[in-house]
Amino acid sequence: MCGIIGYVGPGPATPRILSGLQRLDYRGYDSAGVVVLDGDRIRVEKMPGKLDHLLDHLKKMPAMNGCVGLGHTRWATHGGPTQRNAHPHLSHRATVAVVHNGIIENHEELRRRLRKRGYRFASETDTEVIAHLVEDHYRGDPLEAVRRAINQLDGSFAIGALFRDHPDVLIGARLNSPLLVGYGEGANYLASDAPAVLPFTRKVAYLEDRELAEIRPGGIRVIDAGGRPRDPKVIDITWDFASAAKEGYPHFMLKEVYEQPRALADTIRGRTNRQHLHFPELEIPARRLRAAKRVTIVACGTAAHAGMTAKYAFEELARIPTEVVLASEFRYGDPVIGRDTLAIAVTQSGETMDTLCAIRAAKEHGALALAVCNVVGSSIPRACDGTVYTHAGPEIGVASTKAYTTQIAVLELLAIRLGMIRGTLTREAARPLLRAMERVPAAVEKALECDGGVAKLARKYAGSRNFMYIGRRYNFPNAYEGALKLKELSYIHAEGYGAGEMKHGPLALVDDTFPTVAVCTKGRAYDKILSNMKEIEARGGILIAVANPRDAKVRALARHVVEVPQTIEMVSPMVTVVPLQLLAYHIAVTLGRDVDKPRNLAKAVTVE
Ligand code: AGP
View 1: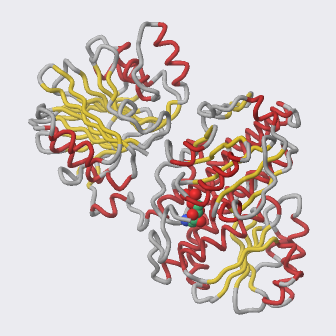
View 2 (view 1 turned 180 degrees about the horizontal axis):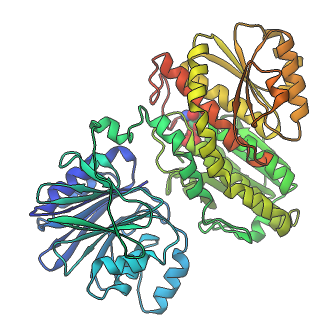
View 3 (view 1 turned 45 degrees about the horizontal axis):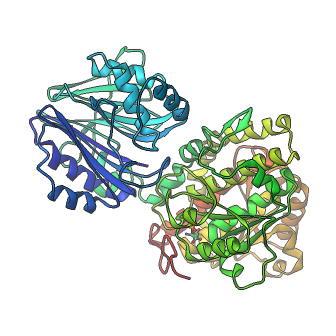
């Protein structure tokens, strides 16, 4: 997610904007920029890389004077992390400068239309479309120009706009992406979140969806997309900086667990519209995907669990043999892989050395290489023939959460696409799957309601020395994922098993000293997992069930039941993992662990 800071007042704007960008540093980004109205000229300076690059660059430039300006840190979604893709973006006649956080789904269509009207584009970003569109609507009233422009945008946006002939105004607008206004003394602010403005003011108002703000030194006017005045709720931020960076959550990991509905919506939105699937950034033609005779997924840790989940979808929907190989093992075996193979690297960071080496080896064997990644322009996408990006935004907690669920979403959408390309899945059969996928963010939102109950369970069982996790089919990998979350966050030993494996050995472990978490939502093997749970219950095992609402059969077996909404089986892992993430989180908190930075671990394992 990008960071935005805007200032309008007696000035100077630049130092306040740079100070605000420094406070947004924690958000993760790959380029930074600043724009000020310096006399009658809009001046833009922007650099790829970290803020220091921009600061060093500014030292070599004439001072950026002016009393109104915007700053931006970019987390790339459309277009790599280059200088020309960095924000701010200027309109065609340099009358408007824009910064943006979010994803404009209809940017390609708008780009085509604006090109026909003579607009020339300097970048690959969706944001630049906004700058030209605002200029296209501009007749002297900045607020009206932005209002008309946003009514043509689909997707998510938090926008800041500055106008060449208005040295005393900033315009802000939002849809599905946070944006606030800050009330200062004789100056006012715009920001993507509170940390950026805390040094200047604690009085803020969060804009609602489809609201716009006209920000002047003497006051702030808010209207809705229809032009009707709005009366924003002004609050006093009591958080300190560290809490504000987590938006009030005690840890980044918990914030990221709660961001999953938005992350999933951003990842799924714009790719499905009941008729067909759309991966704008995937530069692999359908004929090459159609030629694949097998799929090999290479990944590590949580990303491998996402791959294991997707195996069921690739085989069920695309009827293509699919294997998941731990990236750290791939190169040291003798994989049977060649031109008939679609190799998929799944990775949040795009820098995991095991996965990078594995996908390079797959390419050397002639495979078609595709990355599923959360970081635009990172090493693994650059090593592949094509990439589909998750839009989870920066994931700061070492334990992967929103990256995992968005990886599953992308992989299952790819499985649907591949099935349609191979003719094993008709358009009609795909429709209910796409509808179910579009409903996942709401189902995850509902699943988050289990948090309080799970926290109680965590306090009750935090002293256990072992945990077992079991699941079947699409939820079998979640047994591994739940166990991994617990291990890496709380340092308690935990094992994940396919539930059918219990009687082949692990049942010998069962007694009343540790819990078994059973993911037993409705699915093709539902009756089977009930009998596996009976085996455990009969031996005094403590069962914690993740189940669909009002499931009497589960209630008869489990000591504790955590309910999550029922969905089709294919998408259920994105929902059932939520209580597993929260259980691991709350146990770790109960034990006083360093939740965001667990011992011995790194966020990206960039060595073999
Ligand atoms: C997951 O919680 C861990 N942090 C770890 O297993 C991680 O998923 C693995 O290292 C892969 O990282 P990547 O997705 O960045 O490639």
